[in-house]
Image (cartoon, rainbow, N blue to C red; front, side, top):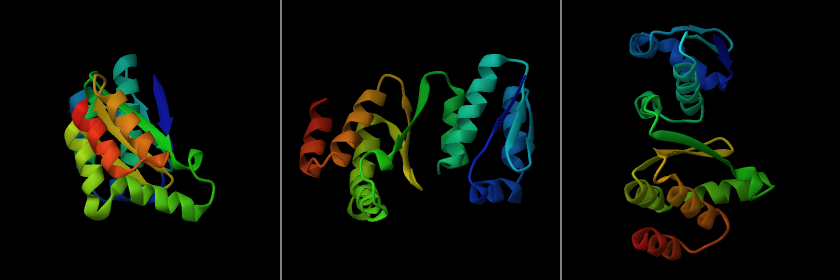
Length: 161
């Protein structure tokens, strides 16, 4: 089975600079990976193919390669939130992404610590890699922030749950 994944050109350039990621993935998954304008994956195991697609999508959405590797474990999940769903103008989207990050990265870090998650703010999206058991809490916290809740309210929500 073969699947192709399109990711931003600037992320493909990072992959082209160093092919250790490719060797690592091929060794871990027994798959063949090619990098052209898109990332093509050939893998006999359907479920591993789907996991590899998630790894590449996560990398394309701004996660480090090491963080994206967590997605090879079926206990982990990737969620992508489109900031355009919360704000139409580019300026509003910029403000919303800044609210999720917080001053000095504080709010992002608090969500990551309380949900055992990794968060990437990239382009017009916010990505979350988290265990399936914790993903709901992380999604709700980010939704609260994007919907206008005060940071202190979100922190209280995280600490209670």
